[in-house]
View 1 (tube, helix red, strand yellow):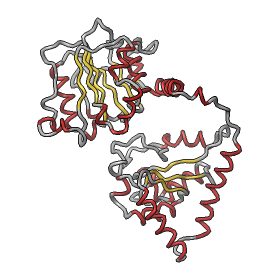
View 2 (view 1 turned 180 degrees about the vertical axis):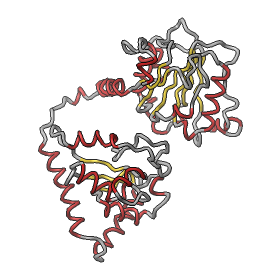
View 3 (view 1 turned 90 degrees about the vertical axis):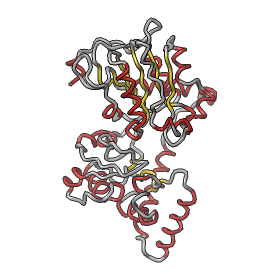
View 4 (view 1 turned 135 degrees about the horizontal axis):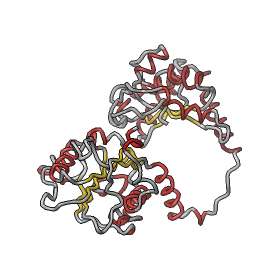
Length: 376
C-alpha cells in the first residue's frame, strides 16, 4: 500500500481527498518488484483513495475518478500492465475523509467493487459496515450486482487464505515474543527506515551534555493512539536519558482539537516558550502533522527567529512533507530549512528509542557527508 503511491501527496487522505499531481512512473517500481518476486509471493495490494491526473492521462482514463474507483488504475495498470493478474486487492479504509466526504457510503462501495477491488475495509465503523453489507446483499438478490464477479472476488479471497495456510511458517517460542523482543525488532526496522533528508554542515549532532540544547515535541497524552504506550515505555525524555542526553530546555506542545491548552490563549501558540534569553547550541523540534497545524508552524518560526544562530534538527513524524512548511529562513550556509531533517515512521516507543540513539550517536559516516553528496 498505498497503490499506486502516496509519495508525492501533501494532503492526509484520512481527512480529505489528495491530488497526486506529481506522480512519477518510478513510484510503481516497488509494486512491480514485489509482484514478480516469487519468494515470498505477494499476497495482496491495498489501493489508495486519491486523484492521479498525470497517471490517468497516460492510461487514457478519466482523471476525475478516484483511484479506488478507477478500473484503469486497478485493472488496466495493476492487474494487467504490472502483472498482478488474479491477485487480491483491498480498498483503503472506506470511512476516510478522502472518500467519505465526497461519496455516499453505499454508492462508494459499489463503485470500488466495480473498479476491481475484492475486499472493502471499514476500520472501527461496524454500524456503517453492516449498513453497506446489507445494501450490497439486497442489490445482489435484486440482480443489480453481477453475481459472477462477486463469486470471482470471493474465490480470490479463498485462494489467498489457502495459499497462506500452505506457507511454511517458522515456529516461534511464545516466550520469545515478549515486549522486549518486539521492541528490539521494531527498533531495527526504524533505524533502517530513518532517512537523512538534509544535512547542512557543520551538523549539531551528536548532542551531548556539553551542549546547551532544547527539545520541543508533541504532548504524548494528546496523541490518543499512543497513551497506552506510556504505561509500557518511557516518553521521549526517558529514552534520551537512557542515551545519556538531557535537554537544557524542554516543552511538549499541545495538539489541535485534543488539548485544552489550545483554548483560548494556546490556540495560536503565542504563549508557548521560546527561551529567547538562553543561547542554544541546538534545537530539536519534533513535528507532528505540521501541515495541518498552523499554530505549530507559527511556533516553529518564533523559535528559529528567537535563535537565529542555532542549528535546528527537525524530526518529522510520519510526514516527511513537514519540511516544506517548517523552514528556518536563510541559514549560515545560504540554504533554506533546518540543518538536519530526520524522519520517523511513527511516534511509538521504538521510534522514540531510535531517535534518542541517533541524536546521541549518529550512524558512522553521518557527520562526514559533504554538501555535494547530500544536495544531489
